[in-house]
Length: 251
Ligand code: 6GU
Image (spheres, rainbow, N blue to C red):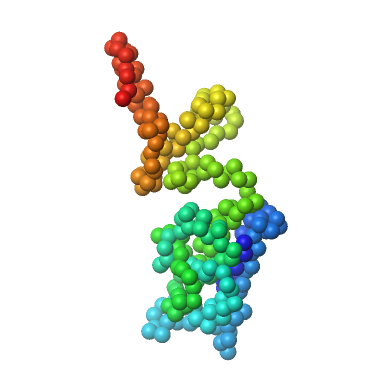
């Protein structure tokens, strides 16, 4: 895949391009990233790329000409980073990861001349807050897309992670068993992968239900999922039943 990022601040990408996974993806030719300085395309006699809006008012608005000329010969799918755009998510990352070429165009927070919009395919935001520019948003998008590309990371890392099937990731632990009184769940030492898988699925369901009820509502729960969700409840009821000398039969 080829990703071209158009920006007035190319230096902001130095760290991004030299971090381990992105750097490795570039050297393995999984992705080709080009950073283009929009300023190189201005035809303004004073070299301006932004000016105050025609109606007056605060801030500098990015001009049409440098942006449009910079992206003119790019045949990729063009995204203008803008707080007004549709909010980015993992499904969008997956859709973009299928494309051969994408262009990410970074705007100022004060804005971009409205007429640039018709030269791009889509406006995208990364969330409901305002950044000083589209640069960090473009890095977030590029990062999430690159890690989905074949060969960028080991594929097993992609299987059980947050947002697959609208489920959050299950908790993971490292040694020691007991850290300041907080213990690793014993089941994870059982060596029984069926039991561990079931436990992890249950934790995914419970954590998503608790922390992201909006995602939880979208999950198509299987009978087994419902059973897992109710398991602790049954155990409590079961114990109560046993205490009373009865056999508890869940239904
Ligand atoms: Cl894409 N740009 C800016 N300036 N702010 C944002 C954003 C984009 N997404 C969220 N906030």
